[in-house]
Image 1: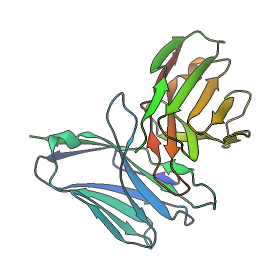
Image 2 (image 1 turned 90 degrees about the vertical axis):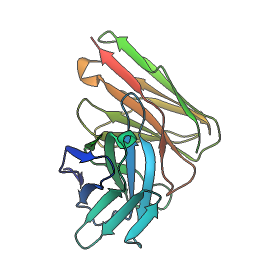
Image 3 (image 1 turned 120 degrees about the vertical axis):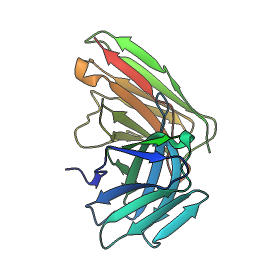
Length: 114
Length: 114
């Protein structure tokens, strides 16, 4: 049962354009969402997060949008740069009072071309 | 964020043997986790490493196969026991400063079993 889904395994975008990565979830208990970037032979690097009480969070070139009614979130990267080429994972968690475990999507490989 | 060191970075092991992976953090952290990423798949939580008590395992993972230690707030080990080719994966340690905070990952241990 895949509770967090990234339906696009890959995405190619031209340098300077916008990259939009999408993520859907099924568990209505999720209340905190994160995006990670992963380069080969490295661990995932935290990018940006959003709480369920917000619908948008912005950090420099990265913006995450959350649509709770649709159980959908997206990561926008503007402008895209060649160094953004990596695998992007969305993750979700449900606050358990003392800790929250992450459930990851399957990842989207972003390639930014010159 | 914390600096996380994992050892070894990679290993090739024989079927039936065991390997212990170490995770060292440069500062005290509340939460430590162990994940597995099988080839072509997403990250799956194995267990939460609890300081001073037994780890909390996710469904499908058992202590006999993946014993975990966490003797203090900066160090944890994961042992993969009686390995088979199906255990070939990347094993990742992650840490969180407190509760519902972003997790930060080590670079992982790439394990191959012959």
